[in-house]
Length: 205
Length: 205
DNA sequence: TAGATTGTTAATCGATTAACAATC
DNA sequence: TAGATTGTTAATCGATTAACAATC
Image 1: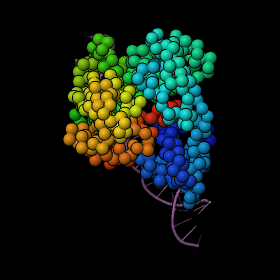
Image 2: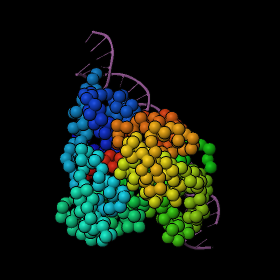
Image 3: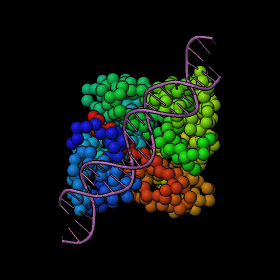
Image 4: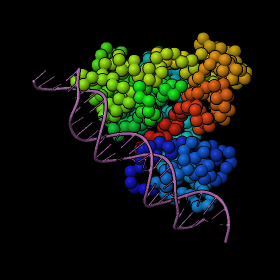
């Protein structure tokens, strides 16, 4: 592993490589090349080689990359060769959909708590989870040592919930609320806002 | 409007500006500066001025930007000063959540059709929509002239649905399936994969 | 061995920032 | 007028691509 700082734009591509490689592995493929992987994910072979080589020499001249080995290495680099516990805040439609989503567990994540500030929802079940009161969020998240949260509350509530998550020690927030969050710079935020994503494409129509 | 090609990375920031400006407008604010807007969205003032100036001179020295005017211009540039009809494919949990999502209409989008390939779901209602058979997708989407689709089917089905959407004339796909899609280069794809977004942050934990 | 493909260097290309004249 | 802030230029910084020696 290289000690120099890796650009965030490279880190952002690794999960895409990981996903494609996992798919190949599931299909029984053992080996791939930067060329082939590049065609799958729409990125140049040169860039893929350059990205991967930031972290070590994982390939072999002439034959390419062992998929199983590269998967292991990428999971290790991204720290997803373990199970991260995740708190979900906001038990609306989107929160319910995420709580039931089957795709997290084999990619390194598990939702373990769900919060909502609606007293009418508190105590209700979502799958196997009981919705907890947002008033308990800081205490519960902090004592469980949870570092990752998903935010599916309405926009007007998002900043104050984010503040509580930060206070509870959360360092990574996946934000579904359509608003830019203000957090300390040692806390990462990723934004998922379908309307924003759509608006990014209409320009070209 | 400038005739030169605008970099996609700039286009990608415009919806973020738009969202922040709309929020300011909703709060009754009339005017802002590149400095202030930058603090809201976490982007430097210089970059915001440069981005906006690609499309015209929308500000005033000394006073900044009229929010209402800049909103109008950004909506016009992004072509969201109208209502785009959207087809949704995949009536699972995520599809249901999107079908009920209130945030599309005032940002330029309206879901008008929902498809699923499960004959058991076809004919059922989601809100005011009746789920239609995926077999009818190409015909229905094409004849309605729909250019935008959201994809919430399982990963193994995503590529073949994308192919049908392309065949039906769709030019923009918001893909929730955790897989890279292969489409002609005149078709845009945006990816929303929560696990990928989370994995992009765990590196820093 | 011959063919294929990596890892890396240097060149190119593109994006961001700093600075400031113009001007409201 | 004095202060503030734009739009734009030039400088800097960073990312991507092309090319190829090394080597499996």
